[in-house]
Length: 352
Image (cartoon, rainbow, N blue to C red; front, side, top):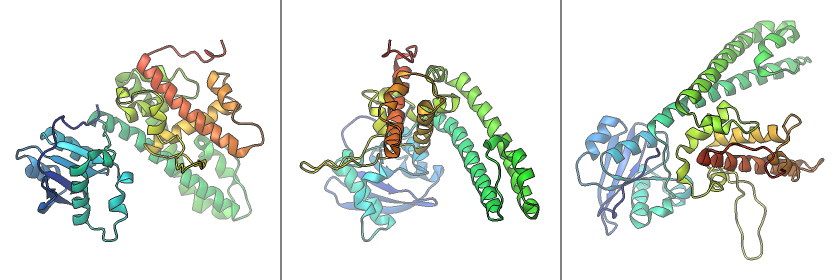
């Protein structure tokens, strides 16, 4: 379950923490906004526990970052009210002309004292979900490393007037070697060896993800009823959302994942803007990939495909991009709905 601050009235003192990789800056303000303490503490579990273990409980404000998941859980366990601020909403800090750690900690403390809603608090996922999500992110890093090596090999061969055959990434190391010019064979052979090794590690990660989903997250089977959603997307969706009841409606999931357009309306002017791209970028990218499959030549006939094709007329490239984004957003809503209700998915329910 995501971290949540304990209910209760705001404390008389508010603490802002500018979390650094080695040291963290702390600023404490009282109910009148007067700075009563400034200090530094090491960004370690032992140091933070020693600094915040003494009662009474306080309201503690920190920004989202690498250390914010474990630190927020630690502070909640010590009885404090923890607010994890969305950095995209803390414009006062980002736009400051005199940005430094002491000032950042003070700004966080003052904003938390006035109105925590201004910080758009973020709810971190629980420790088990974060641990299991690390398996998926590790796989993604392997895929991106393999993609970079493949692109380098193709560009190197093109610079010599050659061209490597088109093929899937899983077969690249085997099919590319005969097409490499003799002058580049000693240079690119180590690349092909690493690519083959990465392919084997990615395949093992895929098997681990399938096994993890079946063993610990049986609800992934509900999501895999939808065409284009496999074990990877289903498990990533479950671990990223973590708690399906955190959303009032399934439609809110699209906004949470940054798949809705930005809004900048002024009077009668309502420009058409790009999507917000908020939330988890990995899940959003996976949903976009699934939408490509749904609307592609191999996608089965479903209500979702028919709906998306209406917004993707042939020859209109921009319309197709918008349709893919819209299908990804609807797919996120559909997956959340299946998760909450446990219904059997009917691909052509509306058509019937």
